Every structure is written in structure tokens, then in C-alpha cells.
Amino acid sequence: MMKRIVLAASLTLALAACQDDGFSRSSTRHLTPIPAATMALMSSKGMSKNDPILIRAYKKESEMEVWKRGTDGRYALLKTYPICRWSGQLGPKTREGDRQVPEGFYTVSPSQMNPNSAYYLSFDTGYPNAFDRSLGRNGGDIMVHGSCSSRGCFAMTDQNIAEIYAIARESFASGQRAFQFQSYPFRMTAKNLAQHRLDPNIGFWKNLKEGSDYFEVTKEEPRVATTSGRYQFNTTSETAVAAVAEKRQKDEQEVADLVAHGEKPVKLVYHDGDSHESFRTALANAMGADGSLVVDARDKFGAVSRPEGLSSGPQQIALDETTGKSKAETPSTALAFASMNQSPAATPAPAKAPAPQIKVAAATQLAPQPVAASAGGTEAPFYKKMFNGIGDLFGSSSATQPAPETAQAAPVGNAAGQKAHAAPQRGAQGTSAVNVAAAVN
Image (cartoon, one colour):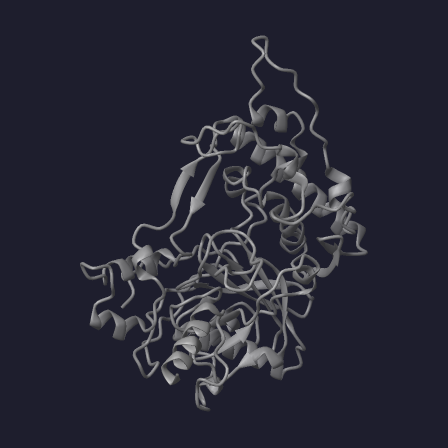
């Protein structure tokens, strides 16, 4: 009987998200100061440890950014951290146990910080938020934490979560009541959006891009609301509305040009999430012949979830432009591409989705025009139908996409959670490339 109880408890833990409350004794690790190198980086950018923060995460690129707000109310990029592990596939989390990492706009308050996490340190992202609940999504305990193991969370390594936790702690201590956590499937670039234009989640991702565009243009935290299964990003500034509309039009044209010049639609299939390239390489080099981590590597990386799926990264599957299916498939019917404008996949779309209050969509939407069939009676390719009216596709322009600050990938610590500090390499203020190709020590 006792064995059955233990087995049931173990299974429950394995299927749950990143629940970690009550597994760790109290320690002082949550009081670790911000590293001197990061303090120097703040100083070089005119920032202070007391300034409010905002965090952005990107699953495909496996990167997490920490931004600091200046006295003018505008945010500037402090530093970019490589993500050691996230699980699932691109796309939102919808239910308990699906191993998906959420995508959307979340709020983190001091009460969501966990100094006694079994994953070194952690904070709860706030999933499910009002948007998720409006769509019937469930689950919870979705964390940003240490180690390199994920069941729906962002695993950052002990060293990186200690630094991020300290930065957030000082902002809270200085009066910030909560910070916004933005989670995206990928960076909202023209190339990414052109490649993923046939994904069933494209309508949801377009909605996320509205908030991303607002932040990119204004460098101000978007005010988020939920109406009819959509995020709304509210602003009363006509200047901001016009600037965001201009960016959207430019992005749409860039995506249209990429598709017209042959950018193929693809689907990425992950074994179970991914790691930043630097971690992926290091973990692949530490694999035994049976696909498991060697003993020395386990001591070095700590807990690593499903390492056997990390060696080669995601599988890229080419999609048929007309059907939206894998080219290896032979479906009998074509997809309804009107879903490009729908709410997230697996969720019934509202009868008529209201335009976002920032008025960007209403100001720039160009409805696709009908395209006649060719003389031979063959249905016109999808990209011709779509790009006869390019308003539904878009991408970030390089002019407004902030380049990430350098932050080298650091190894997960040993059993005591200790590891060498990798000091960030400074570049030009707010405009430097990520340099994380160096192997993990």
C-alpha cells in the first residue's frame, strides 16, 4: 500500500508543471547581490539597480531579455540571457500537463518570487492570466527558475536565475509593484513570420505582435486588457498609434517581399522544446552512447530534462503553399486560410473580433482581394491570394528591433549550486549582438 502511495505521488509530480514549493529548506541564496560586472553594465548605460524592470522571452531563439526603465519612462535593454531549457513546441500553453511554455503578456508581483525553490530560485510567470482563463486554459505553477530541466517552464541555470532574481528583487525593494513578463514564440522578425505564416497559431501570434510593436516603437510598457478572446493594448497617444501603424505597414511589406522572393513556409517540430545553441552544443558533447548524460556532465549541468532530444535541434518540415500541409502528405482538402485572422488554435473564434484599441489594425488592415483561378483551372498559390492584399502578414523591421546585449551562457552548477561567473561583454549601448557561441565551461 505504501509503495502505491509513493508511486502515485511520484507520477503526480512528474506530470505537473514546475511546482517546487516546499521542497527546499530556507537559505540566503535569494540575497545574493547583483554581480559587479552587471552593476558596471548598468552604470555604463545610465541605469540603476533601483530602476523598474520588464522581461521578454523568446522560445525559438531560447533567449530572455531584461530591460530597465529610465527616468523618461522608456525602457532600454540591459542584458540578454541564454535559456538552458524550455519544453514543448512553439505555441501557447492550453492545459495542465501539456509541457507547453506559455506565450502572452503576464504580470509578476513580489508574492510570486520564491526564495526557497527546489530549482535554486524561481518566480511564477502568472499563467494563467485573464486572457488564458477567458479561453478556458488551465494549469499553473509555470516558473522561470534555475537548473536545466523544464516541464513547461523557463530553466535558466542556477547562475543566471540568481542574477535575474537579484535584479528583480532590487526593483521591488525600490517600489516597483510588479513587472511585465512578455513571452513570445520567436522574435517578431519578417523572416520568422514569413516562415511560420501557415501555422495554425498565426492569428494568435499576430495579436501578440501588436503588443510587441507598441513596445518596440514607444519603449513603454503596453497596457494590456482582454476582450473577446484577444489581447488589447490601450493607448491614448495619437503619436504612438501613428508610429505603430507605420511600423506595421513596413513590416507587412517586408514579409510580402520575402514570400515573393521565395521564402518557404515551414513547421518546426521539437523533440521536447529546446536549449540555446551554446547549451545545446555543450549538452550534446556530454552525451553517452546510450543518449544519457555521463556522470561528470550530470555533476556539471545538474538536472537536464530529456537530453536525448537536444543534439540536433528542431526538425524543419517544408509545408505546401497551397494546402498548408507537409509536402509529404496528400490531404484531400485544402486548409481554410481565412484562419490567418482567427483567434488562437483550438479555440472558437468570436463572431466578430473587435479592433484593438491602439487602432493599429483598423488603421492599416488591407483586406485580401479575390484572385481568379488560372486559365488551366488550377487554384492560385496561397501566397498570391494572400499577397494581393498584404495587410495580414507582417514582420519586425531591423530598424526597430533592439539588438540583444551580450551575455555568455553559463554552466549549470554542481550539487551545491556553485559555478563560475561569466561576465557580460559590453557592446554599444542598447545595440550589441549576442555572443553566446562559446562553449559552456
